[in-house]
Every structure is written in structure tokens, then in C-alpha cells.
Image (cartoon, rainbow, N blue to C red; front, side, top):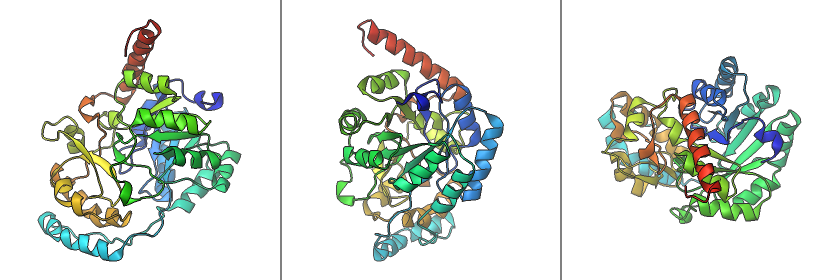
Length: 357
């Protein structure tokens, strides 16, 4: 990775931005203070909500940090399919005594307003999910001194990130928890995502910009592995979800290692876009029928997910998690960074001595 960017954080450890209240300022600050790059998640927040979190984070740390922004989504959902799914969810609404949300609550997640805030109040790093910003957007952020990253799940998407002028690409393997950062949501490709190591190799040959590897990384030895494969840093989400500072619901944190939840799946059940979560009742019952309709399905199911959490029912929540979820460690975030750094150093020493990870 370019020296200027890596100088921002001493350790090649990036805390993934997890929307929905997980990546709170306290979590990002703890990661930054420990030598990693902490991230705030602007997704599902208003521009002012994002700005207030940036102010709070700045009061907690003087170290560089990042903010993640969702790209606006094109209108391709079939309204009839959304209506059918709403009828299928009627029983859930009755069970949780909640009204279904309005699927037409907005498509752009306040994108333009957030860009105004980020230009007027620059932050060190901004990353984008669900697509690539225009060259004009990237240039505007560069002019205020911000480094720009964007997620990619294929070599072609990585090329688009490079063409936009971004400083690096977040190569997201299919192992990753939460939403896949595909640039176009094509149902025909569901389940065909690339594993992280294969993706890193292909992206490395496709682009010349630095790579941040994301997907299922839970240990320092895995960080060493992706660095050896050609990445410049590793982005971890699920590993930080269980930390003390994480804003995740306590039910969500416990579910990561609960024997009741033995595996993950990519599903459209909760949001209408492929996202990896722990397999629970809601996912099993509704995943097979959920249409490709983001953010309509996200808005539709939002009250149900909130009601399930309020009722203490993990079977109705979106329990986003990567494939390595059972390796989660309940530690303070700063201590987790220290442990990961120690494991990374041990793994590198082993490799240097001809050992194995």
C-alpha cells in the first residue's frame, strides 16, 4: 500500500465498518488507539447522524480513522415481488406485534448530503460499499486530503475501483459476514462468489493499486496469510463484533459462539441483497423466497428485526457473521488488536524460519 496511507495506521489491521449500530465511535477509537484503522459506518444513518459520530470519535482519539458510505442503488426491484414478500411476512408482523416497514423509504441513503459533510469536514479515509463513486467524487475527496477505498468482489469490480482513481481496493471474499459489496446485484450469480485467497490473487493481477483483504479473517495467522498472498492490510468485521466496545446487540454477540447457530449462509431474507448471517428460523423460512430488492426489503423487515431484538428472540434477527464466527473472542477491542498483532508477528517469524502458519 502507498506509504502515505499505511503511515496512517502502524498495524495492517482494519476494523470493518458494520452498519446497524455495531461500529460505534468507542469501537473505532479503541482500534485506532491500539494501532489499527478504526471505521465508522455511515450506512442507515442521516448525514447529521454521521457527522455527530465523527465529532464523537474525534473527541475519543486523535489518530486517523475511516468512514464508510453506501452507494445509491439503482431502481430494479419488481414491486409485485416486494408485495408478495410482504404478504409472506404478515405472520411475522402478527407474531412480533409490529407493522411492516415502508419499502419505499428511500434508495440513496442520504449519499449526496453525506458527501457534503465529508468534503466540508474531511476525514482521513472514506470507503464505499455497493459500488464505485464517480471520478469527480473521488477527486473531490482527494482535494480535501482524504484517501479513498472501495469494495470489490471480482477482478472486474477491482478494475472499476482503480479506474475511478481510488487509492486502494477492499477485496471482499465470499466468506465475509454482512452484505457482499457487489457493484451490481445480479441474482443469477448468487452463491458464485470468490473465496478470499483466490480473489486476492486475481485482483493483484488485475490492478496495481493496494489491496485490503476482507472475509472470514479472525486470527493473526490469517492476516499473515493474506499479506503473503499480496494484500497490504486485512479488514476484520466479525472478529470485532464480539468485542466489549461493539454496539452489537448482546444476543448477536452471544450467537456467534452459541452451539444453536452452527453455520452461516448468504441470504436475501432480511434486506433483499446477498448478506452472510447465522442461519436462524427467519433465514430458513424466508430466505428461499426473498426477492432481489434492496433497499426495499431492508426497509420492509426493519421493524420486524427491531421487534425481535426487543423481544429477546435471536431467531428473528439479522445475525450477520462471517464464516469464522465461532473463533470470535470476547475481548476489549484494543486488546484484540494487540493479540492479533502478536499472532501476526509469530506467524511471520514462522514463515521467515521456513515454518507454516
